[in-house]
Length: 464
Image (tube, rainbow, N blue to C red):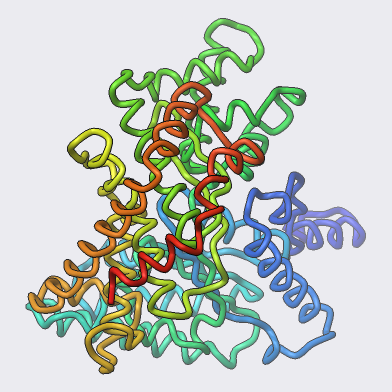
């Protein structure tokens, strides 16, 4: 291309244009809607990468591995893309599915894997993004007919990761929805130095998610109210919602309006029938009352949308004692207990996905038994993330977990029975207002918090 230039200066300009990375305009990673703690970690990482490129720090001081964990649609791929752009790195996106696209034979997959790492080294500085990292499997799972294949593939990945530890300019980012399915050897420091957990955006962050996808559209729109309607939507769902609303506006040959977004949310989430609305309100109010009564967490907000209910809590820094964990188990199962107390039966609202009340309570109770030495044995049987896989094979462990959960639900029921008038009042207000927070929530819970010390003593005694 340079030889086609008529002058020396023209050749230089062509070479410069072809070899220099293009400057991409638009908001960067620091504008992407993320929790403050996640954003601060990524900011430090970008600063280190820029400092290394400027020769200010050695490659040995740079964080070279990042593991992003979270449910679908929480921005894992976008974080990798923006991180590379802000740091001035090239990007290669790959996965086990891509490595096995030509052949499922382990030798061919390993060959494709090594080619991806080799290409990243050639393009350095470069970010190698490995999506769906859990697809490789875990060598510690129960033996099956795929065990030898898994051992071979993971061994090959570990060899690639360790081989790149001392080669400058390559950052490896892994992404997964299921941390427990990833082999512990992959997760150890030196391979993935930084671990970031991403969650579906809460009410404080959801307006920023809408603003990110709306870009310059609707600059003065009330995104707080819109976010309340879209409670618990992931970033990917918000992006799809905005695209559909824009398409609808274009079909009518007009600019996007806030009403387009509201209409799309109503289409996706039709209003709850009155009976279901009352059940959801009782469920969420139950969580708040038990948390306020036993000190497991501080209730921050309760909300109901067409998609269901939601409760926000300010959680303590970490579980320290057996009583702390038992109190939190009561909080997690208080929704079920409240439904049983007020309505006489329970629904499936406490179950479902990995973020449901039952899933969180089961994982917490299992960790006490096999990881933390706070159950019936002092023996350590596995790490917290992999704890649930043992429940499938260990009937005795399942029974111990069931006992913990049953006691927790009983404890929650006792607290809610004591504060049933408060439960009814709070659920009634939530049905009417759809969202309660701040001083109004404190007012409803004041009768509970005033008796917190006495209630907490009773709950602790129930587990003795």
